[in-house]
Amino acid sequence: MSVHNPSVSVIMNCYNGEKYLREAIGSVLAQTKKNWEIVFWDNQSTDDSAQIAQSYEDPRIKYYLSESFTPLGEARNQAIKQSQGELIAFLDCDDLWLPEKLSKQVPLFSDLEVGLVISDSYFFNDKGIQKQLYKKKKPPVGNVFKELLGEYFISLETAIIRRQALDSLSHWFDPRFNMIEEYDLFVRLGHQWHLAYVDQVLAKWRVHNESLTWTHSSEFPLERKLMLQKLKESIPEFERNYAKEINLINRTCIFEFALEAWKAQKNKDARLILQPYATTSIKWFLTYCMTWLPYGVFKIIYRLKGGNLV
Image 1: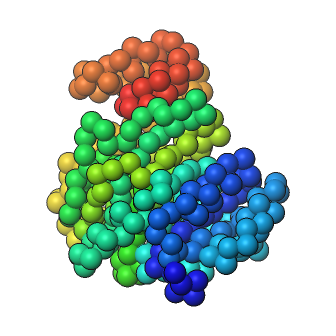
Image 2: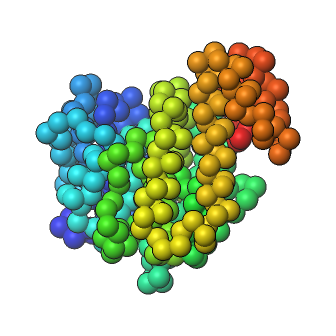
């Protein structure tokens, strides 16, 4: 084990994450592979996160305090700048790793075309496991740019990135994004590098009411549109070669605009947005029908279905 030359840098960004922080750090300490560092980036927390992070005597846990509060994407960029590992992994303060995560995923980087390795994951809450991410459908591997673009399938707590792959990009996390900064990053990685997958649950993603998915959902469609514009400007013949995937993203944006109208109690507006697409699939049809009900009903059903209704 080397403190000065870790093979994996674990990026742990934190803003008021005291509630689950010891569990998250403990899941890294429990790794069977020991050559890692935690880059703990405190984004101006006002709770006990700093005291908890600095209470460990393990020199592999390195605490940094941001000079000011920044959006998550920029905070992750700042943390990465402090990292030393040849591989970069991410663990938010409310998520967990299983003990063999690093020892199972790191060997797949022996393929020099691989820039990104993921694994299966459990989505869970305080009541227990809700969903296994890839239980029904395994993710594609290899050159997966089209698949990532059209139907994003990566959960951040499972991802490990080759630093060389990260540095091959024109930029890392785009600080303009609050909701899709991971999507944007991994799509760009997928255009240049291969993805590998360990078919084993090696991480756990915590679902809770404070999730940005619910508190800032109105930003999703606007950010998706901006991402498409970025890709159009950087990839030759993007619109012609990826028309199907672009159409899928645009349909997703339309759906999200309808949900925002519904959430604002503008049910009629939501139906008008959904109506042209209501007969294209059972999911769209059912959602269209549900707009005669309060938005809270949809939210409950969405969660009960593990976030897979649409």
